[in-house]
Length: 187
View 1: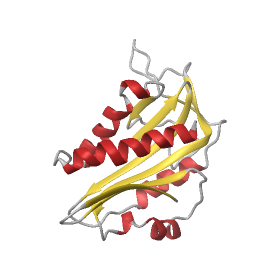
View 2: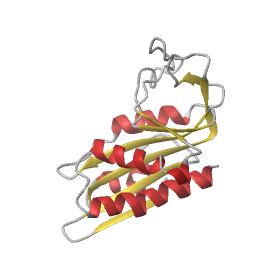
View 3: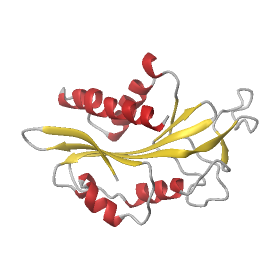
């Protein structure tokens, strides 16, 4: 499942989102999030459920309790991917909060369960429909920024972050005045 999802995410990033960016149709992190959602919800990827900024109820992990990842992806009742996004063409990017969130996700396993569905009668969490975290959870840090921003330098970020995770990837959208380069790196 990890390989399949990574192929999907790489295709969306390098082919769809890069095309949208190069057409001048991306102007914010929120719009980047919407583009990811749009492409993940496409008919060819309908095995996955996409959650935008779900408020997490993980009391045993204070770093994640009441936090909102930009995007979470599930298949059946298992969370298989978490994406943190950054879009900033004006100044540097502070990655500290995103990396703290991703670090906290890297510690989770199948024993941690959270609700994501809501009870349609009252809007509260439906605690009868809990999700577990995949042992092969994919963590993604996706960035569109000017080419000289540290947030695009996988090697520098890898040395800076204080944790290891076997399935962590870096989606890079590097921009300069003449060209753009969208690619995937593994941390």
